Image (cartoon, rainbow, N blue to C red; front, side, top):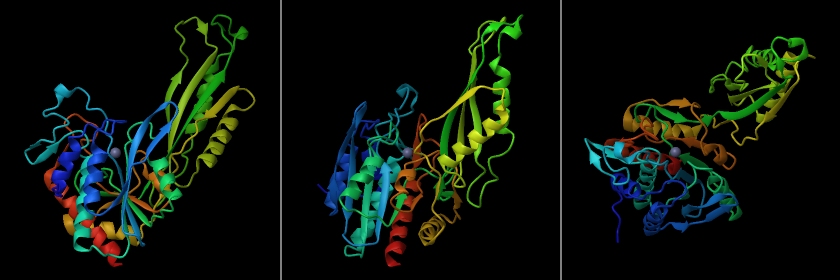
Length: 387
Ligand SMILES: [Zn+2]
């Protein structure tokens, strides 16, 4: 059977697959059949890890030479929530008022449909182009993210695959298609502080040691000075204290200990290691000889990275401008994404649909945006393989 390769039809087929993490839901099988029909070599590795569900993934390649442009993304989606609150069934792919509804419409089955439509259109017109186009699609982005992109990249490397550049199709535009390309992401680091005191009666404070003033001094020491002032491409790193806990229900008891948690979203002036050293320095200074405390920093794989605005970023910005008339902002804002794993293998840039309804009830995408994003990807391929 020959598939309808319009971005809308591909997106509808994907939305009808109930692929809530970690379920494959038929989504990867659909992509496999479409890509095979177009001449791709397709693999479907399944990865496991004790304590996490097995996850299916997909890797596909067309062509043998270089340069090798990789499209990356995920077919898994977050749960729909209360289905009765959706205007239309979240897994039916219905169109109303020029918009396609469904869980994953923008995050990111719609984006994958556009990548496929753009790539297949390019290949149809340039079957013997010099280079390769690939797809690296995981079913484990919205979940624990253990059996997905990280292992898929290692697996591909083990097969000798070498990527030149990657486009990750996450929804990067805040309001309109063409608003924003992400050329990097901040890192994330979480730490916990425990200040030790001695429990006692409030009327006999000399027999006790209240940990709360000590915690206040430590937190003040952490927050007093900004971590940095930002860079050309990044906002200033930000430390947020997310909770302070004593858990003391009694007004006449001095508590035994105080706990606090903080999270830092940091730019590429820092590594998790250098940041941890700075936190330790600030706490040591604030504590002096009087505050007894312990710091634990959680291991993180969310390291800040930047893909410098080079020719590759230029191809994408040019294609966006040609199709939408907008000059996209080159941004490093937002949370972490799988780009932090991909960047260890090749430069990666993120551009996809408009993110406004992602993870929401009535997630939806303008049908016109699907068509335009597919054209943008096609134009990127034209420029990339002509260069
Ligand atoms: Zn996503």
